[in-house]
Image (cartoon, rainbow, N blue to C red; front, top):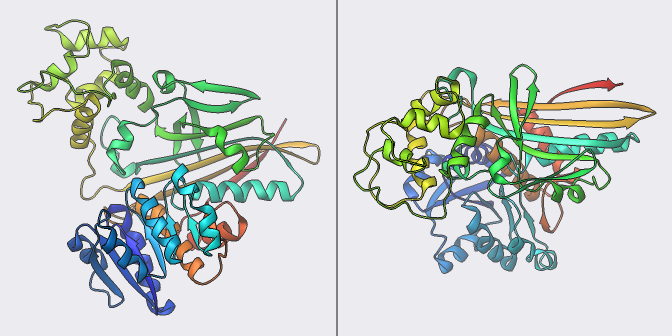
Length: 444
């Protein structure tokens, strides 16, 4: 019997745990789920004969090493900062490791030791990063194999709300980590556009979006993510003239979110003073140039928006102008905003989320130019089997199975951009309803 250790039993782990348990009998696995809350882990196992729940404390080195020593493979859905300490133990003990988080500099330092110990540390095997890499490489490799030349490549992903659960003027609810949403885009976005390097600072980011069409689901806004330039070598696109990776939001989101950015409400670098006993309208007033009895009109004038327009409707709906008490304690502007948004953007019990991915590629082949678009839309089944849980958990679980069965044989620190990794994962994802629709058209 082989032993699978899953670390983290949070919301995004639900589908992963169910998948590994569903395969456990045929594959002869014992699936152990470790979480800081053993009760949560026990609940996720649901009494399955091949499942075991344990308390797992990522800060307890001896306990952590004992748990990993008993496993044949480790799948980590812990917070990103905790992955490296787990991966270090995996390398030392000769255990392969899978996670859905970005490779950082500390993880990269483990590569040589992992190769020497015949261990695979497979990172970025979730949704974004993960399915985005695999589906992108599938497109790019197909065109190159046919002798084509890639001219441009754009890739966008969004964790959104399904149409039937879209019930607020922002057309958005939290379907993943709220803090990451509030702090999204901070830093400078870097990408290539028609052969020119482009740099967009945070204060301008949400004004620099494109309107994108997803067949069957309408139009979306796509704004660029952090550093797209780093993917030129990774994707084999050193000569491409346009390369953009970005985030999708529904129409109207970016202009409204930009108001928060311009006011400074997304700043997480300092604590607001003098907020004890104050209200949300006081919070809003603290970012305006002068104290006023007509906060709404002052707000609209200062941010250059229509006082009767859709953006103001979004702000009123959030409660920024209400005489309702602020939460206790001291918080940064971003933390106050997050508290408010978690209240207003929460998923209701019957809500369903939606993950959308869109790749747009232009290429030349046999003297002609083509545009190829590939899109994926996955909707949640309920508030446990969410689209996010499916698209994060299933790739990691399928990858772990393929590593255990010798289908994936690489060693060292990797992400799933090689065909022997991504082809079997994409094939099984399609069997679970996670698949892409493609359209190809000739360009004049």
